[in-house]
Length: 337
Image: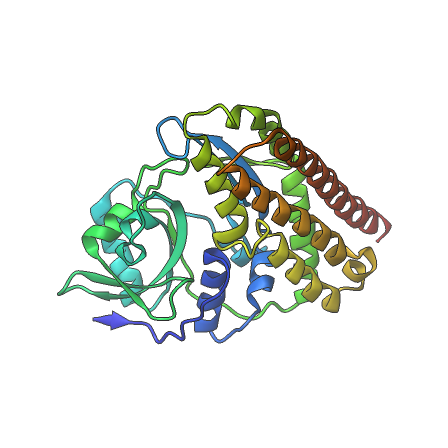
């Protein structure tokens, strides 16, 4: 049996807590919000599932936040996939035996400590131990203070789930070392700019395209949501994604606001632009959207629908203004340097 010397931390979001736990293993402690922001975590997906339920879903996080956090000019991290389950399992065992924590993307349906009746692929955990005799992996998961046990068989299923909208192929990457960022202010400013650049220009991934303009696609299809067979489940799941599922109540906008408040302490540029205040205004509207979606999952009135459309239009406008301001000011600053 091999279990890493691990001080398990819990928090808001699976990915940012996973980052924090891994860097803590290497002797570094950054606030969870800082981890989320340095990974450029804001995004927006809108997906129509062919067979998955609910039949249409939204997600408000950017892809690749976890490897983005660790990537620098010297080393690029990325999610690694594997086609062979035996190779994937053996590699995971070897990484743990070598003393390296491993990020894994999983479907919580197969993580039995969740007792989930629905599939949710892409949930990030960190594998930190293995018992080969009893065929058990030990994992760190954001929602649990205690280290969780996952059988080899369940782990194989969780890592290879083909549930929509994000089929998995043993997606993973390991971190072999980590030190504090030498120039945290520069890292923060680059991450803020990169997040806005990705969001305005669109970021393609296995889940689809994350883009601010995807909000408009979703907005144009909202009227369809009322007519779909599983309409109540669609509205309810959208509410859960925005308000409940590891997003701090506003589709990750509040946790990003917290990151920007930290950034203002490190960067005069960020403080001058008042980005945290802008993001707080955006977060407040997303929270209201989430709560209205919850209401509409039970009863849909024309007034509620019209209010939802107006709020979605408003949040798109505020997000576009925010990210345009970031891009314009960071570019102009670079040109003047």
